[in-house]
Length: 315
Image (cartoon, rainbow, N blue to C red):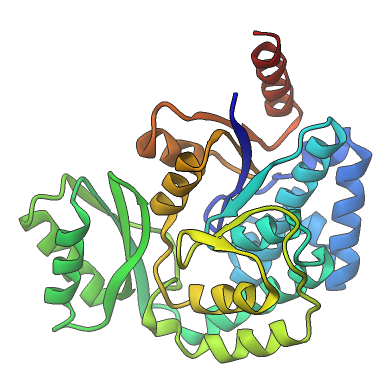
């Protein structure tokens, strides 16, 4: 079958009710959510399971909520005998990947991502920044669109998600101008994303020293299994390079397509998206339609994966 990789989603995958089914069905998931509530000193699980959409959209709530859901799903998978041989996570998801690899303690990761969310929100006041997806335009032309639009303000490529989709981020007027130029250069379409922070661009450069200081107080360990970092689409192993990758990731582009292509070239064949939503599964089908992709966020999707896994093993 080839090696198994677990991949973890980032911000944007959240929804009210995520994780609740896992908590209702599995003790290990309940334990993860209880640990999250205790570590943050708030009822994070209540906000996730039955809170308001508006509250869950607050970046400092969203980020620990997605992390907690991903780790709850991870623990359930492990309980069923499924463990990865390598991991990666998109943006925020990289923290879940590092928890899975034994590099970051879960409680510490929760605290760091909560502050990371707060720092990001404060760095770009509401209405200043935005993000947009550009579809069907090659990298070089997306870069060209951003360079031309930079006459209006800051705009840069933020996520190289798949051959079909690149996200740009920056100041709203410049971001919109980049989308206009992208269409002139042949983009199939563009779509503004419902975010208030322009992630992964230089507007967030000021967050880096704040995040670096937070990471200094965390006991980061060497990884126990391979982790591919967003910033380089290559493996990180030692504490210093792990922290450096997490810090630089804030204001630099996420190399997601490259990261997945790296893992595929290294023999990973089954990719399991662990956590809320199906965004990474959708991207993988664009990156490499031959890769086996599954997604686990509740008892139903877990059952589907276990059935497929049993058939693969048997076949």
